[in-house]
Length: 366
Image (cartoon, rainbow, N blue to C red; front, side, top):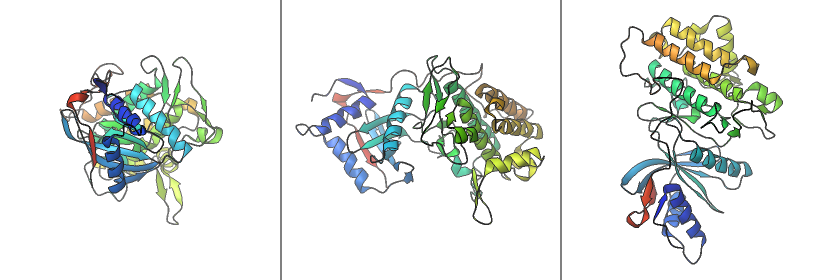
């Protein structure tokens, strides 16, 4: 099998994957990756397999940190989610969606390679046992404005062709880069619909994450874009309260944050549940605006929930209120005009390499 002169990195990985299947032309690249994945300890265990922190060297990019997700090939659901993830992240690119660098798919391996978000996932900053103060109130606003714009991008006719429902908006799926820019990840449960319809999907196999899922979806099996809005409301309250979506009671009974937060909001007791690490930084009017949109997202009836465009507007208004008289020049958003602006950095194909001059190798770190 002759190697083409020029191809994108995903095509490059697929090429060597196909070559590895041929007994006449086995490749050391695929074997090296497989061997190192077998030998090295995993970074953490995810829902459908192992997640590794690795170092990628290819072309003129040397020692680039990446995340390698090795899925369990034995599960049908994992197989389906793998192909959905590849399709979504290859087709739809945005500065606040995690970048898929490459993938490998054969009878024995399903591997995804992503950019590495150095500040980890949002949920690691929200546990009541977390002692770090790295996540400021301004960081919280920036993170959520980023995510609100991504939701608008997904829900409102992506490239005028499709509407996408993510179906698993959680704080664990919001990753943070070195500048605290949000990167929405895990598109394996996503659904694609036509842009000119109010899309409803009937889901026969339960999906989503307990504590974040739309109760109407759980009750009826009907998934809509308002289901993403509900999940967003849960994460908004997670950020405000500094707690994860599930809470253990004194009797080790699992309770969910959305019930608890909604009750305190209706009773005018928000002051009792705000995260102490950001409490003194929040202006009262900004708190009212932020908590109001979070509460609206959690309405039991999907018809009463805000649109993604309304979430964007309210969060931008919250930021404007918060920054009045503060003169905080370093806190800004790339979305300076209008409701949405796509990043030019991610348009078109992924970075291309000349294979005659390039070696691709993946080394998994300890």
